[in-house]
Image (tube, rainbow, N blue to C red; front, side):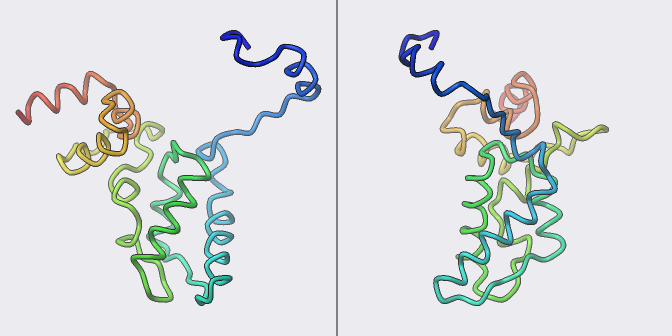
Length: 151
């Protein structure tokens, strides 16, 4: 509305009861339920419903999910394509989930950055280094220092 691309009268008509949907990182208990839902959808396409290994579920619970539920759905689809078996293992998950767990929200020392993890984050962020730093759970300056050392 501030940028004048939304009609004010329509805004007030729709904004009777504001609804706040918290991001997936604030609803970690929903991750197993949503993952199971997306796995069951695979069964509708003629595939037996696979299950998640403990390690895969643990990685998913630790990840920050910047893309929220849509990113979780895409990760499940990715794992289904890679797995082919009845169990989705950690190795079937996308690289960013395997390597970039939710370090920004965990106390204590952060894991060391790897060139592969940084490259994956920069690619996922479309070259935007600020977004890549968020995906990695680090500050932008930390990412720049890492990139300078690599050159």
